[in-house]
Length: 189
Length: 189
DNA sequence: GTCTATAAAGCGATAGAC
DNA sequence: GTCTATCGCTTTATAGAC
Image (cartoon, helix red, strand yellow):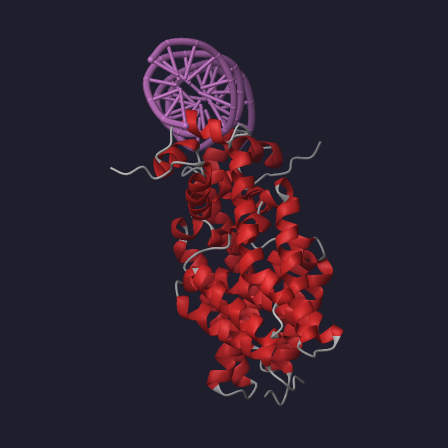
């Protein structure tokens, strides 16, 4: 049987899925060892700080993923509209059409919001800011860009809540389309 | 010193706040006894089913509150636009301008979504459906009404996530205004 | 109804052998 | 690096006195 984890970075990927599924408090070391096939010895070797350090590593990985695939393109891609299209593609893929939850969003609603304040706040602030700058580059005025970017990030997070609640990934897909249309509309009211 | 709780219904109100603050998994009996000033004996007298039954009672109370203050007016109030105005007022007050979290939304993002599937699904389905019927009563066509109502519920939930993340209740207020405007716009594109 | 005492299990974390 | 054993603590839940 192949090992699931052979280095720390593999562990982080597995941990992300566990935390997403069970939440921070609901994730016990025993479910972690079960899902990662790593004993406590190895876990504490990789993450001396225990569960907190594991969650921090996961948040860091998530932050890096979004930075590479979403935020940086929003800032740097010369074609602003292409960057927005790409954002929605990546988001849809990442959240598996709404069947996967946003760990940062889930943390935001719980006590984890205080425990990991820096990472949670950073994730959302960056997202809104970079989308805003992209919209400005696309020719929107600043007020509208701010409004639209906030609205889009809010819409994605809210859609994840609703899609999971009523068990329809169609809700998520529909919402992404609506948000994209709103962002790309040339002559917005 | 006055007792915080003297009947089951008082306990439920206190429990709601505890679950909202600590989440389901993060809420231990010790924090419950601390916040409700009720010993384990009384707790298990009121809720023989333990924590699960407590959370169920809380969800029921939340459902009833929204039914009375939000859902029923959306269905029955002759003046559809007044019902929508009322919805936003009640929502803003209930969520304390975004400083308070939606327990049902938080449950939706975690394992509690399976454990309390009926209540979580019911809450959101009712909300979307009743808002939809209200919009139709206000003269919207069915497709648009469906889209707008989903968009509004999503927006509220997403705004709660974002407001808590970046610590600004202004985000929540701004979003409510934007959503209300969108719902009440006479000639929507 | 509310209390105290207590059970049984699970928790995060550590130690030390290998 | 990974294992097993174990620590000390907290957890949910129950029992029985009052």
